[in-house]
Amino acid sequence: MKKIILALSLFALFGTASAHGPYRYGWHGGYGCGGCWIAPAVIGGAIGYELSRPATVYVEPQPIYTVPQPVVQQPPIGYHWQEMIDPQTNLKKIVLVPN
Image 1 (tube, rainbow, N blue to C red):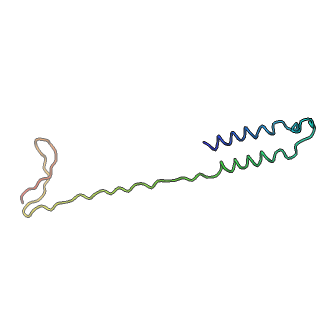
Image 2 (cartoon, one colour):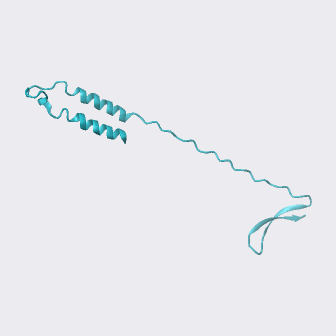
Image 3 (tube, rainbow, N blue to C red):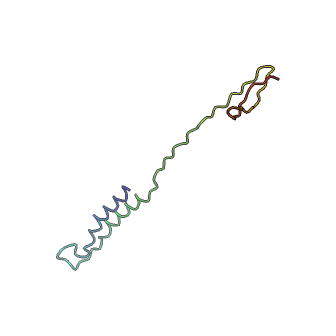
């Protein structure tokens, strides 16, 4: 955005310099200005070069999340895990049941 504002302000400043055409030298009204285009062309080229340069893009690396693995307990000897539905809450629960 700053580059566009700079380009427009420079154009407004230097664009009006050649707006008077052949009357640049005041009373020599009939003389043309053979090299009057050089300064606006150089300035316009510099502005065009600056606006056309690719901008550096910084990409943040994605964070790495580690998910802890669930700890599976081995049941004691003579027992095993079994999934049951609790009659009071109607939810599934895993309980120890004797073999």
